[in-house]
Length: 283
Ligand code: OGA
Ligand code: MN
Image (cartoon, rainbow, N blue to C red; front, top):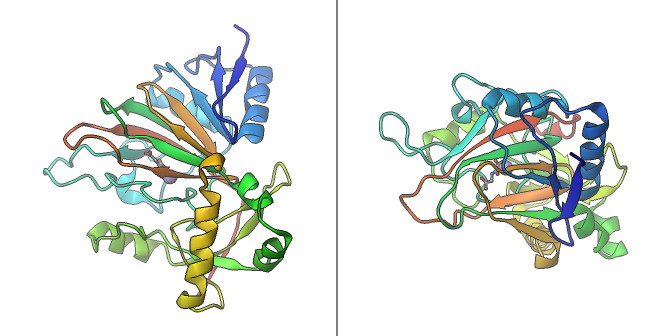
């Protein structure tokens, strides 16, 4: 079957049709997918009835997988390469630790020294309506800044934490996250290691700018996130069961909207491809 590519929005994303991810792809098929990934930032594969092993095997084509040591509570007990994004309660009836995963604009693993290259999220149980994810194109966001703003932010670093700025209840999970993942400085502008293009690198997990006060940082960070998430830079994904969505964490951000009926199940599983080193510890 020939591979076809259908754009998902003007800003970013493409659906790849004509592939079966339960099979091993040839090198030329994989090369076409990889090129589309670099060009479009997001890939969607629909109707992929695949196993956990097949999800992991396809993800490995893109690089070494993270075993989620920095998110130990959220990984699958038998498959450390799989991160659970689920609202299914724990066995003891407690709320799932990953119920609110991703409910702020972010790029995966930005709070580590090896931020992710890309993530592949598989939709396993999808609510009857909603549970959408939005993505934004951080190349476009960077390119649309004025020359003055580009110059000003070029040398700056943001402080990334694993904490959730928006929700941030003082739960055991949040305290554990802070202890495992001390704050890290990341450049506000990153050069994509494969395309060489500059992309904005901010988000709701950035608490402050290095060498600035919180009061000085906040208006600039708020502006950059608001700018980067303008509707024309965004694609909103409406999940179907057996979707695989892959995104490039080096040039996109995403957010889980949590817009689905209380009481319905939403269960997804993610692999995380490791990226190149970036950032430094503050202490
Ligand atoms: C993630 C994430 C968003 C969602 O898996 O990294 O942010 O909509 N998920 O579940
Ligand atoms: Mn995420």
